[in-house]
Image 1 (cartoon, rainbow, N blue to C red):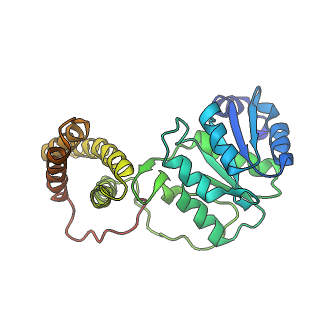
Image 2 (cartoon, rainbow, N blue to C red):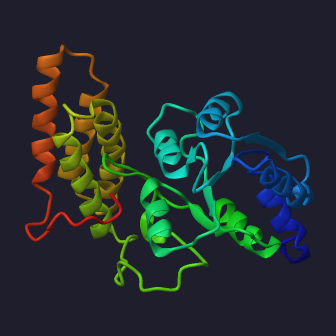
Length: 269
């Protein structure tokens, strides 16, 4: 495994000691246990239904999750979304989705559900190695939005899909792109304060931190101040109506930093 590179092996092993496998076929868990043996004392926790998988995720706090795309008793997309939007400690754990049919629809569906990697069955040891390296050694930014929660979709990989990329121009790492994305998430969260209050507030809190970092990077004190005001507002214990008025005021002040030509494109949010 990993071309005999012991250092790489050790780095990967340190991050995946507890692995949850949600698959109706127990043989999948046995196969993964056998292939992961070189990583040392990896504990495999099998679950044959999505319901049992979610309960086990709450109990064992897995560092890596394998989930079947769609099979008897399992809707991998729904389970992934449920974990991502939960209060579980493992909600940000890497998810590798497995399926016998790697269609473009399945791959992009997995990406939009918050999956890190996609792997076709039957998979080889080489397929597994590439996915393990990707999820442990190549960290991806976490997107805390409203419509989407999960790893940055602009870096979603699949060795199975050879078609065109959805976005040919990917400037995700630029300050301008980070600012635009964070402000779009803030605007989306503001619109979801009534329909999805828990996730809306979680998204606002995350973007307050991101916008402060962006403001500090570009040395824009007004943006830093506006982001800090939003952060303070999210931590406030003021009465409901009063807190809502203050929160909307903080959001409005941030919207002034949105570029006039920002069309609110889908991006990674």
